[in-house]
Length: 304
Image (tube, rainbow, N blue to C red):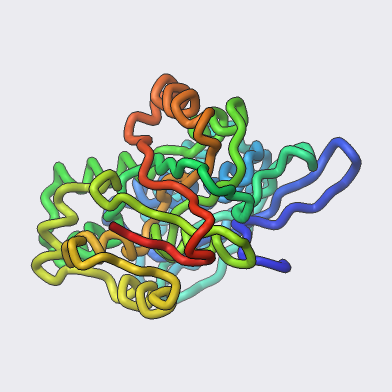
């Protein structure tokens, strides 16, 4: 708890530690099965970001039993357990409450060797920064709520958010990295800032290399952005220097709160190409180098 890590790690023996995390939220897509899939992938992501293997999970359910058909909840849980099976995770229980607002997620326990834990603050000058999934999920989710997203886009978005970060994590652990975090509610730049807290390094981000859903550009330009985007920006603006050449829509995407986003890794320059190859071979096709770690300015991010 001493810093903003993605999950808690507790050492049991010299060779074994457990990773613990919890995450749940309201629906971001209309289909209940898809919502269950996305919620589980999102909850498991924190374990993958630490380099661990998720082992067991417990459901967290808030459901308006008097306002919604129980079939909806059954379908959400079906989507969730199917995604857990995909991840090799065993559901061992859970807890539910009657709540006027539907929410679903997991409490997750994973395993890792204590000496192999990947922290989010170990980046070193010269490291390359690799992002494994495109940005823009928050903006597109806002467009879905406004009825502006076409079915084909919803399907593409859902497929991305429901994709586990397992392959990315396995490639990361096989090659070796200095730091990692997953990109979720604080947005790309928000989580990148967390990687710099209490360190002696900074980052330079090449905005032209950052992957994002093309449709997010159109929605951002029309003002369809979530309220969390501006809150993320307000909270971290003192740590971020965005050059005037970066268009407004892209600035919004960089602060956009993500759901089940990708991993952001800091890897040595000599291993960067090897890691990219391992990621692409493992099916993480959107992985790309988006910047580098620098000695100065300290604890600042320059976006050019």
